Image 1 (cartoon, rainbow, N blue to C red):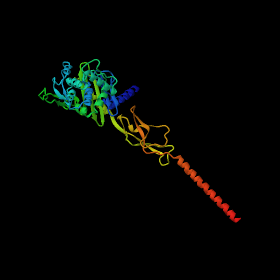
Image 2: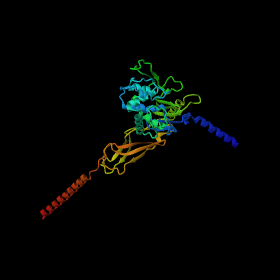
Image 3: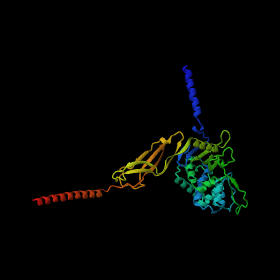
Image 4: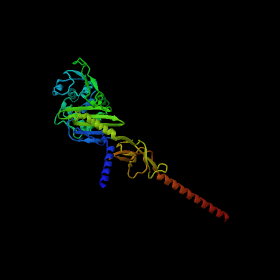
Length: 413
């Protein structure tokens, strides 16, 4: 009987586990390295070998594009040099640029990012940096500026080189920065682009589709309606790579997938893994605004303040929005308030007098606490003068009364 009860109990637990389990409880990523980050909070939702040095292939061009945008007028005309075209190894993607051809920076950026044209990458690198080596120095300087710790670029397009590497996390940092630029964002979300006729290429038949299938509505296997760019990449050493962004329900994610191959069903793992990561984020997490900017957090009594101003309201200098697992009740989170030591009057309205900190899902979110109003210091000299004045009046009054009594006595005598 005991064995039967035990088996029955285990069966109930098994059934419950089946009912509560969902795909969102785990993510099976085929690719060697990956990361999923919510952009507004910087919270890492998922990671796999995210700081391992990897070959980035053409995801390199994210850095190339943002540097070009920041250092050029997009209407500038660039003349294609033979030395630039000679840098492209045989078998790599190009947009068939011609020696002496004149194109705008804008046109070159579109073919750099959509079909991933390697000739455009070298042309732009030579134009902006003066040479590929100097442009690579600019790339590395920018990477360090953005906080990248394990990145080194030697070319503008990701053509394989053992000294050209990065990490999934560093690529997230670069992509996050680049996507804040409206022009960059516009380019990487474009699905198709046609180069105009030029002085060396008179036809307008150089039309190119974006290699990112996540934003292609006609891609039955890979299309993701909420995806926005960003860049694919492939070399035999790097495998299939992608950096992608997705926006829905107030949540904005960047996913980086590196060295993906094919799934068991023969699908490209970089797209499949990206979709899995995005779905995992949306299924399990939500953004919650815990407190609004300028909300009164607490009221404290300030020493040495006037009676009218000693009770001071503390307001928060910015809203605090957290990304939390949907299973967590953030309304029950109690904040930690830290005020400056020895707070005394006077205090000016808007002055920082402390901090407030919320801890949600082991992530800390903080903001400054400001004085809502002026706190006026009691003027003790003024009080002393008043007190002395009152005492003098009292003394004078006593003396006057005493003198009157003396006069009355004299009159009686």
